Amino acid sequence: MAPACFSDERAVAVSAERLWKVILDAPAMVKVCAGLVDAVEIEGDGGPGTINTLKLNPAADAGSVYKTRLVSCDNASHVVKSEVLEAQSKVGKFKSHSLESKLEATDVGSCVAKLKVECELEDGSSLSPEQEKTIVDGYFGMLKMIEAYLVAHPAEYA
Picture 1 (spheres, helix red, strand yellow):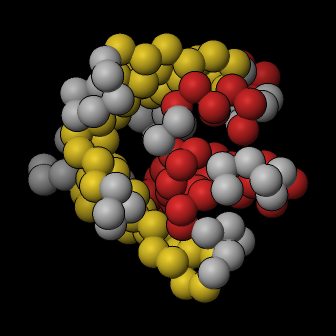
Picture 2: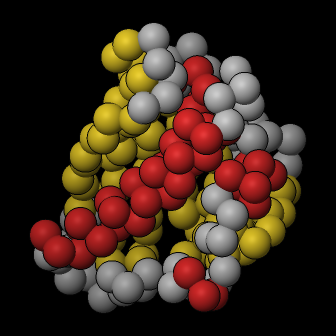
């Protein structure tokens, strides 16, 4: 079976520039996503090939580890592509899982976050609409935590 490909977008009440700075600052996730991310390990220089491992709080029902490899990062267009190497998912085990995030400014203090996901389950089965929603909601749930932090701390990442 071919990999599933789906996308979604959400409005965010902070500028693309501020949100981008946080997305590129993996160690900040412990502070910005307090209660969800307990620790961050980084292998690499921050460029393509860098592996980020987020150790998640088990009480947050998010699993234990979320490990990604940076595939590409375009600062000018605010696009980052990564490959998920390890993640606990309510959806099932993945044979492959990649994502692309893009931030587009909509106003001085807001943007739209666009997410494109490509994944394939290990057993070859198709994803249901509910499974796709679970994946998208997980990514956007973390984005909402980042947004809430930035709104509460307007001087940070300015």
